[in-house]
Length: 430
Ligand code: DOR
Ligand code: ZN
Image 1 (cartoon, rainbow, N blue to C red):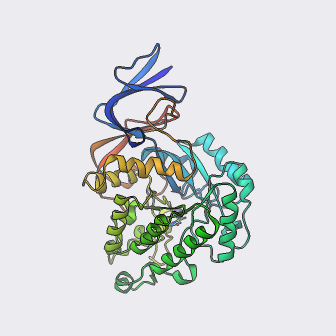
Image 2: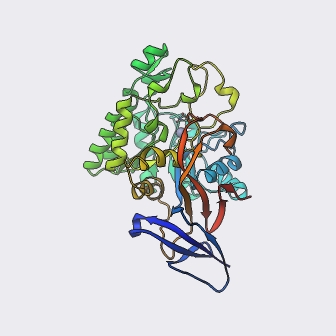
């Protein structure tokens, strides 16, 4: 039976579309885009007043299964993703056991097929056990569907090893996504080094701990030709390095998180909120403004959440003892709508590029567009819903958001994956 989605405003810069129209979907694919569509047998949904775009993809998510199911698992993490409007996420490999071999890749795929509420793309570790010393079974993981490589959570210290990782990944046309951190320089850093570390009396995490690693990895990208995607970049100077690499024609891309765009080190008050302890740390207001400029001018390719769930008791400790990270899947779209689109800083087209088009391109995934023949992975949101972020509202097992109490405008209401609803009217479909 066909599905007809009626009266939404359809926006997709890939096909130059921005108009109120209908979509006819059959067998998981879009059959027709037009007006007053009909079919022999069909069900229909009226989406008047809502905006429909190619399905959002978050390429930096910690689902925690296997090993840390007290924080999150594939069932809860993908429900959280659907609730936030996402049709696909890329799972990070820092689980236990670590995703550094084909069996671990198969486990995540199988579990996602069984209990997932969105597509789960699997990234594999670059080095065994994220140890930085021995290459992971990269070729085998690619053969089993791994779409990218990262030692997320850590930098790869040995430059020779990083070169081998890039040489190897290049053979498979897979992107390497470094977590840019010079571990020795960052040391036990807790917050941005400078005003914040002095004010709070905490160990500093210098911007250079990120920038030096990016400089090195861009040089290695030049040497090897391997596509390089810089994870959660946070400083103005780091972004300038990416800009220069792009100008040179190197295959370098980068991502930023909503928390590094909206929050700064100044938000960490003397109540020492552990929900704002993230890796890399919140930087200066000038850095955040610089990142927003990059979002506008195209230097930033992708918005990701780095959704990093932790148990309540883990975060309910002294700042130095709490783990790094905040959740993000259920606030990401609304934060971008509220702080960038609603303020006129970017338009919907750019938002779709950042959250749906570029993520797929970077991970070598099939294009999804609002045109006949495309897979029907779709995100629908109401740009006018005003809501307050509440911990009790999250479908994630974790509540460690830095945005609880924030008033946001715009929210995902309906999500379709392969033509099937995973969320309808704000409720995840079970
Ligand atoms: O804040 C973070 N938490 N950043 C990372 O890169 C890793 C993540 C985690 O795994 O908790
Ligand atoms: Zn991460």
